[in-house]
Image (tube, rainbow, N blue to C red; front, side):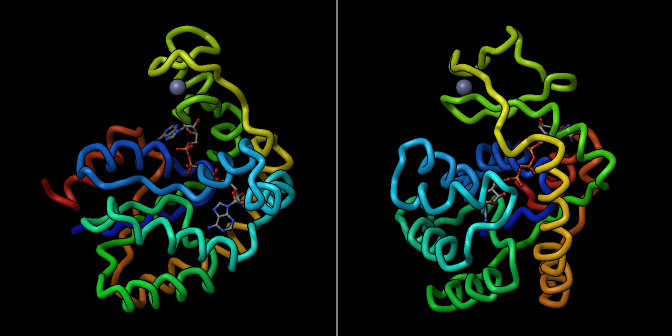
Length: 215
Ligand code: ADP
Ligand code: ADP
Ligand code: ZN
């Protein structure tokens, strides 16, 4: 059983690696950002609560996030492990998640901390594009779709997230440094942290992850 957390600033490549890890190890990829975005799109009560925070690059309140994640990882498909992308993002969330794991008799396998400097992140985020239909991530320069504006996988329309403008990205990086970066210390103390250089090419990063996690 593998329970994996992906940590790192916005644009570190968490989503990109998560898709590959989830596929190789057969565990569900749980992205809190994706769950919120689909709730916003559907106009659910949760989506209406989260939207304002997301558009400004602020974090959604801890209580909302923790309840959502606990519900999701209690489902049947998570009983043999799961991969969290974008959670926990605060010390409150990390402690809450530890309590949950203890209550459910499970143990965290590893926290993969993808480190990338702000100067690399800004152009990455500004060039990020996402499929409206299946959520696959592209980059206008480094990972463009075969046909402009059209998803390679599902033919869906490719768009730019409203929180991927330069000003919001700067704010999200600041929020990351203040609220999420302290988690590296928290997980290092718990003996769970492995640091990766997220500035390397996607294949190289994935190779390091599979070396670590095994077959
Ligand atoms: P990225 O990976 O680009 O940083 P995400 O897609 O993970 O962005 O998250 C988008 C937005 O969703 C965040 O800026 C925040 O508003 C909200 N969000 C996602 N996960 C969390 C979380 N664990 N705690 C609080 N807010 C969250
Ligand atoms: P996160 O989920 O951490 O916010 P993403 O996986 O969405 O990050 O990646 C952000 C942007 O950077 C995307 O446009 C993606 O295609 C691109 N990207 C991801 N990993 C790399 C990498 N190792 N090198 C260069 N660009 C990358
Ligand atoms: Zn698609």
